Length: 153
Image (tube, rainbow, N blue to C red):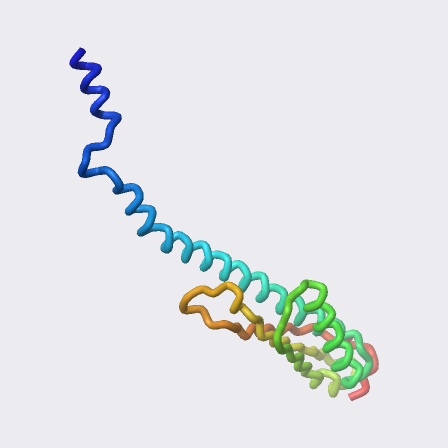
């Protein structure tokens, strides 16, 4: 019978231990919530950065197949904005800067064109303490021009 009594005592919490689980949950819940919000923020930032890089790559590629610097700038801007829209990346402001200096070279000389895409992403909906409401993401990509194609520069 003493074994039964000992076993019964092990299963019950003593008066000093009652409520300690509730206190632990109250203390840990905000920390866990903050951790989850930081993971969500990092994921959104990473996806947005990848989207901006993809838009810059598409803009550089579109500019590299154009025949003139003016056409290259227009094609690059259109490609970048289309890419950002297709990826559902909502930029409060976005800029596309195209470097068309490679068009000035004579046919037969290597040249490149580069595109820089900047996107200001609104992250205020996350409400993570210490995280700014907007993040500015920038990516620059280059693409080679066809070495033997005529260029208007």
